[in-house]
Length: 183
Ligand SMILES: [Fe+2]
Image (tube, rainbow, N blue to C red; front, side):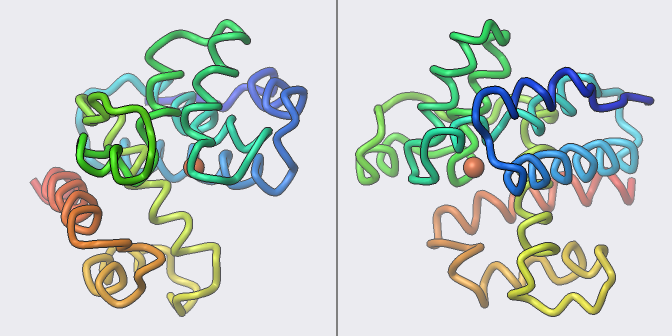
């Protein structure tokens, strides 16, 4: 279960124009996703988890708007990244949109469902890292607090829960992944 984030991958983000702050976020999400993967005890493709997480915000090289998912995927394929990695860049927006939500947000209408546990762990880790690092929620210096209070935090802070559909999607990932840790 050992995977180390590659310096060459970080360099790729930097060369593409991703800011140092955004790179720091991507690395933290990768570390958190790998930690969670390990805690589930499941047999998982850890290299994919690390790279999904590291590249998920590649599009922020160009914009922080909601289009950064689609733009990241385009950029990633120009850089020669495998399709499964460019797919997660496009799908990570709000953790896997329904067609209705995509339509509402003016994004291409297609299937954004997160099909693998590797993808869902990365999306869950992304949300946790935001909660842990943004300083909006006082988690009292204990990262696990973000997991323990996940449901309550998403309900209380629209920034994290967004709306009922998004909130329930994230709670579904939370239940699934936490369930594996206990099992
Ligand atoms: Fe993002």
